[in-house]
Image (spheres, rainbow, N blue to C red):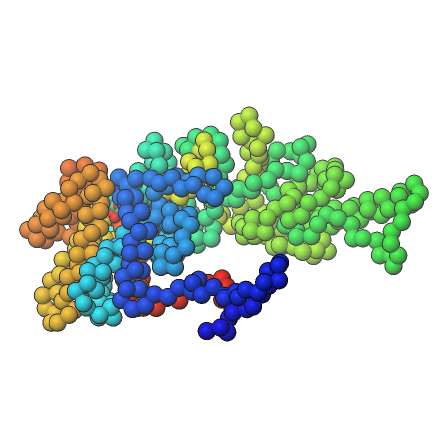
Length: 542
Ligand code: ADP
């Protein structure tokens, strides 16, 4: 085929033929492709396997710029890996969707997907058609989910039950993610933050109102929940009072800048007089703006843009506290929290559009010159900011992740108070149900059901292994116990507490999170099983 061949000449005039590179176009097909995908996914997933559970290990991830992250959070680990395999990328998305929907259980979902893929691989080796496997897994997943639904416990969620249930759940979800000294602080913060923005009656949590702010420095225990908004800003002039009270806030998206004088010709300033005229023009304009602000009754100006020294000085001398360069999302949050309107033009300022807050004060940090502004006693008191400190970037980042996870667990419980038990108890329960159903299946589905059940068993096994226990022995003991005691909350005693009763240890998982894990992992397996052709076009294609 010479259609993509070109005749060219070298510098000596000798002709030669260039054939466009065909080697770049890769193609895998059929069962081989499916198996290759499973292997690719396994290579990636096995990396996060050792991070599962309270005794899971951390990973150091080195970014392209040499920046490092230390974490044991599945979604974070996967997101930071530089993967060029398409199937591996699906796993990253898997962890991501669990994170988006539920916010917790990202490692677990990948471990489960890995186990399902391994089982699928074995079934393929037995010669079972990929679609048969996929359909069998789907049916098995339905049984597993139904079993969880049936055995879930409803725990009491209320302000009064705060300490008994929510706090315990938050504590469990923190696991050993952060230094144990700070454990209690984090758990309290997670519960307080969620309760502050929750409507228990309607089982609704307005997640948008919880904001996280970080500042390197201090210790991880210095974290604080600010009932209001924290802005990484300071008042625009060092002589402005460090604290403003009874604040009426003008929230502006227009700059403190005089409009350019309207002349048809370009502005030439060739004499001192002309300069003075211009300066006076600017001064008048500034005064006009400031009087518009003052007339509205505002005593604080929050501006999305900057202003120069001249304007800053005028603001100071007019007794206005000002903040400049507030980012768009912070400005919005400020407006929501203070019940103010974002005003695009000075002329539009009216008393009703001002935000109100009891106090705006500057926070100063130790010997550094860093400052932040706290806006408290806002009229819409529900917005809260979790302020996380730590001695270095890595600790702060891991603190944020840990807090995020436990906030998500508490939020999920407020939304749906049904729980299943952790330490692999829920998986074991589902596994037994699926395996019992397998006996009633005729034909090929029986294999798929058994395989699905074995995949579920992997979760307690991995937990056991990561905790230094013998996985097979632990699993068989648990199964025996489960069969004898008919108890739905027997799991792996990862922390060596001396009992397998996860209810007693309050190791719980929100039902919605566990169900989501099962559904997502099954979906992913199905997807991979259904792909039988991958065509990757090389860069030289046209
Ligand atoms: P994920 O990212 O999936 O949340 P984690 O590393 O947080 O992963 O591990 C969660 C798993 O560890 C869950 O299966 C949970 O039930 C289990 N687990 C957490 N704490 C304990 C505990 N104290 N004892 C036994 N299992 C626990």
